[in-house]
Figure 1: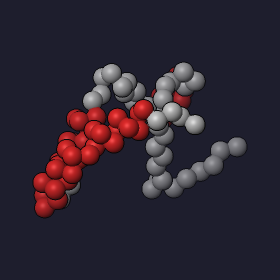
Figure 2 (figure 1 turned 45 degrees about the vertical axis):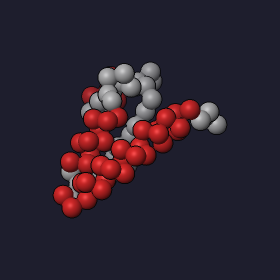
Figure 3 (figure 1 turned 180 degrees about the vertical axis):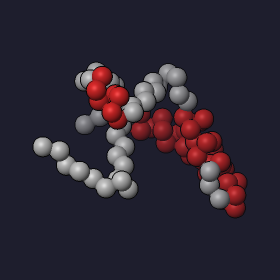
Figure 4 (figure 1 turned 120 degrees about the vertical axis):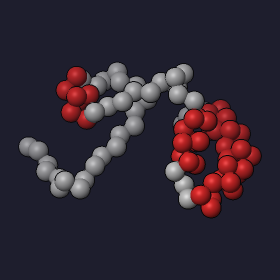
Length: 81
């Protein structure tokens, strides 16, 4: 049985790896795999900031420069429960 959703419904899934993904899952869901080694967080953050209102860009950049990398390093160090 399939559940039907309207054309305005979209799903986004995030996974750590594609170990259990079948070819059908990849083709139907349009999965994109980005490895940690290939994608740097700084590029993603800068791209996000560039899409924000111009009036906020300078403040966002200074806040992120002050705290983002330190916060990310701390999160990655905390043991997963």
